[in-house]
Length: 253
Image (spheres, rainbow, N blue to C red):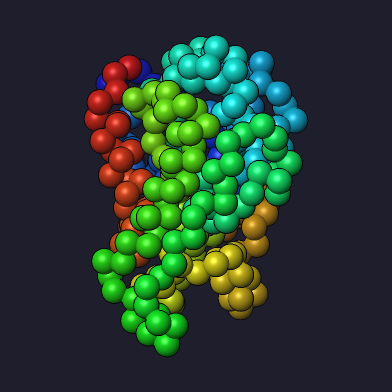
Protein backbone atom coordinates (compact mmCIF):
# COMPACT_ATOMS: atom_id res chain seq x y z
CA UNK A 1 0.00 0.00 0.00
CA UNK A 2 1.48 3.28 -1.04
CA UNK A 3 -1.30 5.78 -0.39
CA UNK A 4 -2.74 7.02 2.89
CA UNK A 5 -5.38 4.84 4.56
CA UNK A 6 -8.64 6.63 5.35
CA UNK A 7 -10.17 5.34 8.59
CA UNK A 8 -13.55 6.61 9.78
CA UNK A 9 -14.66 6.39 13.41
CA UNK A 10 -18.20 6.57 14.78
CA UNK A 11 -17.97 6.57 18.57
CA UNK A 12 -19.85 7.53 21.69
CA UNK A 13 -17.63 10.41 22.76
CA UNK A 14 -14.46 12.41 22.18
CA UNK A 15 -12.42 10.48 24.77
CA UNK A 16 -13.33 7.24 22.99
CA UNK A 17 -12.05 8.75 19.74
CA UNK A 18 -8.71 9.53 21.39
CA UNK A 19 -8.34 5.95 22.68
CA UNK A 20 -9.33 4.37 19.36
CA UNK A 21 -6.79 6.50 17.50
CA UNK A 22 -4.08 5.26 19.88
CA UNK A 23 -5.14 1.66 19.28
CA UNK A 24 -5.07 2.14 15.51
CA UNK A 25 -1.59 3.63 15.82
CA UNK A 26 -0.47 0.47 17.61
CA UNK A 27 -2.07 -1.97 15.18
CA UNK A 28 -0.91 -0.23 12.01
CA UNK A 29 2.47 0.65 13.51
CA UNK A 30 4.82 2.01 10.86
CA UNK A 31 3.41 -0.10 8.03
CA UNK A 32 1.24 2.57 6.41
CA UNK A 33 0.39 6.23 6.47
CA UNK A 34 -3.16 6.77 7.74
CA UNK A 35 -5.64 9.40 8.83
CA UNK A 36 -8.52 8.94 11.28
CA UNK A 37 -11.71 10.86 10.56
CA UNK A 38 -14.10 11.43 13.44
CA UNK A 39 -17.54 11.04 11.89
CA UNK A 40 -19.38 11.03 15.21
CA UNK A 41 -19.04 12.99 17.42
CA UNK A 42 -17.96 16.26 15.78
CA UNK A 43 -18.38 15.39 12.13
CA UNK A 44 -15.54 16.24 9.78
CA UNK A 45 -15.97 18.21 6.58
CA UNK A 46 -16.22 14.95 4.64
CA UNK A 47 -19.53 14.26 6.40
CA UNK A 48 -20.65 17.88 6.66
CA UNK A 49 -24.18 17.03 5.51
CA UNK A 50 -24.79 15.21 8.78
CA UNK A 51 -26.71 16.95 11.51
CA UNK A 52 -24.22 18.58 13.87
CA UNK A 53 -26.60 18.28 16.82
CA UNK A 54 -26.74 14.50 17.07
CA UNK A 55 -25.48 14.53 20.64
CA UNK A 56 -22.94 12.17 22.17
CA UNK A 57 -23.20 8.80 23.88
CA UNK A 58 -24.82 5.70 22.43
CA UNK A 59 -27.89 7.66 21.32
CA UNK A 60 -25.64 9.97 19.28
CA UNK A 61 -24.17 6.92 17.55
CA UNK A 62 -27.67 5.65 16.84
CA UNK A 63 -28.83 8.98 15.41
CA UNK A 64 -25.69 9.23 13.27
CA UNK A 65 -26.14 5.76 11.78
CA UNK A 66 -29.84 6.25 11.11
CA UNK A 67 -29.26 9.62 9.46
CA UNK A 68 -26.51 8.20 7.25
CA UNK A 69 -28.80 5.33 6.31
CA UNK A 70 -31.54 7.81 5.40
CA UNK A 71 -29.12 9.88 3.30
CA UNK A 72 -28.20 6.78 1.30
CA UNK A 73 -31.80 5.69 0.65
CA UNK A 74 -31.74 2.99 3.29
CA UNK A 75 -28.45 1.44 2.20
CA UNK A 76 -25.88 2.47 4.78
CA UNK A 77 -23.00 0.77 2.98
CA UNK A 78 -23.68 2.94 -0.09
CA UNK A 79 -23.27 6.24 1.76
CA UNK A 80 -20.90 8.42 -0.26
CA UNK A 81 -18.72 9.14 2.77
CA UNK A 82 -18.48 5.48 3.79
CA UNK A 83 -17.54 4.37 0.28
CA UNK A 84 -14.42 6.53 0.28
CA UNK A 85 -13.10 4.98 3.51
CA UNK A 86 -10.66 2.08 3.69
CA UNK A 87 -11.92 1.09 7.15
CA UNK A 88 -14.90 2.09 9.28
CA UNK A 89 -14.89 1.62 13.07
CA UNK A 90 -18.20 1.71 14.95
CA UNK A 91 -17.82 1.94 18.71
CA UNK A 92 -20.46 1.17 21.32
CA UNK A 93 -19.84 0.15 24.91
CA UNK A 94 -21.38 -3.15 25.94
CA UNK A 95 -23.23 -1.51 28.84
CA UNK A 96 -25.55 0.00 26.22
CA UNK A 97 -27.37 -3.34 26.33
CA UNK A 98 -29.00 -2.09 29.56
CA UNK A 99 -30.27 1.16 28.03
CA UNK A 100 -33.69 1.90 26.57
CA UNK A 101 -34.66 4.14 23.68
CA UNK A 102 -36.59 6.26 26.14
CA UNK A 103 -33.30 6.88 27.98
CA UNK A 104 -31.78 8.16 24.73
CA UNK A 105 -34.85 10.22 23.76
CA UNK A 106 -35.25 8.17 20.61
CA UNK A 107 -38.52 7.25 18.93
CA UNK A 108 -39.83 5.02 16.16
CA UNK A 109 -37.14 2.35 16.53
CA UNK A 110 -37.74 -1.37 16.98
CA UNK A 111 -37.78 -2.04 20.69
CA UNK A 112 -34.55 -4.11 20.87
CA UNK A 113 -33.14 -2.23 23.87
CA UNK A 114 -32.57 -3.12 26.58
CA UNK A 115 -31.24 -6.48 25.42
CA UNK A 116 -32.24 -9.65 27.25
CA UNK A 117 -30.21 -9.92 30.43
CA UNK A 118 -27.10 -12.11 30.21
CA UNK A 119 -26.20 -13.12 33.74
CA UNK A 120 -23.08 -14.75 35.14
CA UNK A 121 -23.87 -18.41 35.96
CA UNK A 122 -21.49 -18.48 38.93
CA UNK A 123 -22.86 -18.07 42.45
CA UNK A 124 -22.04 -14.65 43.88
CA UNK A 125 -19.51 -16.08 46.35
CA UNK A 126 -17.56 -17.74 43.53
CA UNK A 127 -17.33 -14.83 41.13
CA UNK A 128 -13.79 -14.04 42.23
CA UNK A 129 -12.86 -17.32 40.51
CA UNK A 130 -14.12 -16.39 37.07
CA UNK A 131 -12.60 -18.80 34.50
CA UNK A 132 -10.29 -17.41 31.83
CA UNK A 133 -12.62 -18.72 29.11
CA UNK A 134 -15.69 -16.91 30.46
CA UNK A 135 -17.85 -15.92 27.47
CA UNK A 136 -20.26 -13.54 29.20
CA UNK A 137 -18.46 -10.42 27.77
CA UNK A 138 -18.62 -12.01 24.29
CA UNK A 139 -22.33 -12.73 24.60
CA UNK A 140 -23.03 -9.17 25.68
CA UNK A 141 -20.86 -7.74 22.90
CA UNK A 142 -22.63 -9.90 20.33
CA UNK A 143 -25.95 -8.59 21.61
CA UNK A 144 -25.01 -4.92 21.12
CA UNK A 145 -23.51 -5.68 17.71
CA UNK A 146 -26.82 -7.21 16.67
CA UNK A 147 -28.60 -4.06 17.80
CA UNK A 148 -26.42 -2.01 15.44
CA UNK A 149 -27.02 -4.45 12.60
CA UNK A 150 -30.76 -4.07 13.18
CA UNK A 151 -30.44 -0.27 13.02
CA UNK A 152 -28.76 -0.64 9.63
CA UNK A 153 -30.99 -3.45 8.35
CA UNK A 154 -27.85 -5.61 8.13
CA UNK A 155 -26.63 -3.40 5.28
CA UNK A 156 -23.04 -2.84 6.41
CA UNK A 157 -19.80 -2.36 4.43
CA UNK A 158 -17.26 -5.17 4.28
CA UNK A 159 -14.63 -2.90 5.80
CA UNK A 160 -16.60 -2.42 9.03
CA UNK A 161 -14.86 -3.21 12.33
CA UNK A 162 -16.88 -3.22 15.54
CA UNK A 163 -15.32 -1.82 18.71
CA UNK A 164 -17.37 -3.12 21.64
CA UNK A 165 -15.52 -2.79 24.97
CA UNK A 166 -17.00 -4.69 27.90
CA UNK A 167 -18.44 -3.12 29.92
CA UNK A 168 -17.07 0.20 28.68
CA UNK A 169 -14.01 1.82 27.14
CA UNK A 170 -12.88 2.78 30.65
CA UNK A 171 -12.08 -0.91 31.24
CA UNK A 172 -9.64 -0.86 28.33
CA UNK A 173 -8.00 2.27 29.73
CA UNK A 174 -7.77 0.66 33.16
CA UNK A 175 -6.26 -2.56 31.76
CA UNK A 176 -3.57 -0.57 29.96
CA UNK A 177 -2.32 1.38 32.94
CA UNK A 178 -3.06 -0.99 35.83
CA UNK A 179 -2.42 -4.54 34.53
CA UNK A 180 -1.55 -5.85 38.00
CA UNK A 181 -4.84 -4.83 39.63
CA UNK A 182 -6.62 -7.63 41.50
CA UNK A 183 -9.72 -7.38 39.29
CA UNK A 184 -7.58 -8.21 36.29
CA UNK A 185 -5.83 -11.08 38.07
CA UNK A 186 -9.26 -12.49 38.93
CA UNK A 187 -10.43 -12.07 35.31
CA UNK A 188 -13.32 -9.86 36.44
CA UNK A 189 -12.56 -6.55 34.74
CA UNK A 190 -14.83 -7.02 31.72
CA UNK A 191 -17.79 -7.68 34.02
CA UNK A 192 -17.25 -4.64 36.27
CA UNK A 193 -20.11 -2.18 35.90
CA UNK A 194 -19.11 1.47 35.51
CA UNK A 195 -15.35 0.81 35.24
CA UNK A 196 -14.73 4.57 35.19
CA UNK A 197 -15.05 4.36 38.98
CA UNK A 198 -11.93 2.18 39.04
CA UNK A 199 -9.95 4.94 37.33
CA UNK A 200 -11.25 7.50 39.81
CA UNK A 201 -10.37 5.26 42.76
CA UNK A 202 -6.65 5.38 42.09
CA UNK A 203 -4.33 7.77 44.00
CA UNK A 204 -4.46 11.32 42.71
CA UNK A 205 -1.14 11.13 40.87
CA UNK A 206 -2.32 8.04 38.95
CA UNK A 207 -5.98 8.93 38.60
CA UNK A 208 -7.41 9.39 35.11
CA UNK A 209 -10.44 11.63 34.78
CA UNK A 210 -12.77 11.06 31.85
CA UNK A 211 -12.17 14.42 30.21
CA UNK A 212 -10.57 15.29 26.89
CA UNK A 213 -7.97 17.37 28.74
CA UNK A 214 -6.91 14.53 31.04
CA UNK A 215 -6.96 11.97 28.26
CA UNK A 216 -4.75 14.11 26.05
CA UNK A 217 -2.37 14.64 28.94
CA UNK A 218 -2.17 11.07 30.26
CA UNK A 219 -3.24 8.78 27.43
CA UNK A 220 -2.32 10.24 24.05
CA UNK A 221 1.21 9.18 23.17
CA UNK A 222 1.49 6.48 25.83
CA UNK A 223 -1.60 4.29 25.45
CA UNK A 224 -0.42 3.07 22.06
CA UNK A 225 2.54 1.32 23.69
CA UNK A 226 0.36 -0.30 26.36
CA UNK A 227 -2.17 -1.94 24.05
CA UNK A 228 -0.63 -5.39 24.60
CA UNK A 229 -1.74 -5.17 28.26
CA UNK A 230 -5.31 -4.65 27.13
CA UNK A 231 -5.26 -7.42 24.54
CA UNK A 232 -3.97 -9.82 27.15
CA UNK A 233 -6.60 -9.00 29.76
CA UNK A 234 -9.72 -7.99 27.81
CA UNK A 235 -11.20 -10.51 25.39
CA UNK A 236 -13.08 -7.86 23.41
CA UNK A 237 -9.85 -5.89 22.94
CA UNK A 238 -8.19 -8.96 21.44
CA UNK A 239 -11.24 -9.50 19.27
CA UNK A 240 -11.10 -5.93 18.00
CA UNK A 241 -7.39 -6.29 17.21
CA UNK A 242 -7.89 -9.47 15.24
CA UNK A 243 -10.89 -8.17 13.32
CA UNK A 244 -9.17 -4.86 12.55
CA UNK A 245 -6.07 -6.62 11.21
CA UNK A 246 -8.21 -9.01 9.16
CA UNK A 247 -9.98 -6.12 7.44
CA UNK A 248 -6.71 -4.21 7.07
CA UNK A 249 -5.24 -7.12 5.15
CA UNK A 250 -8.08 -6.98 2.63
CA UNK A 251 -8.24 -3.26 1.87
CA UNK A 252 -6.66 -1.64 -1.15
CA UNK A 253 -5.61 1.98 -1.49
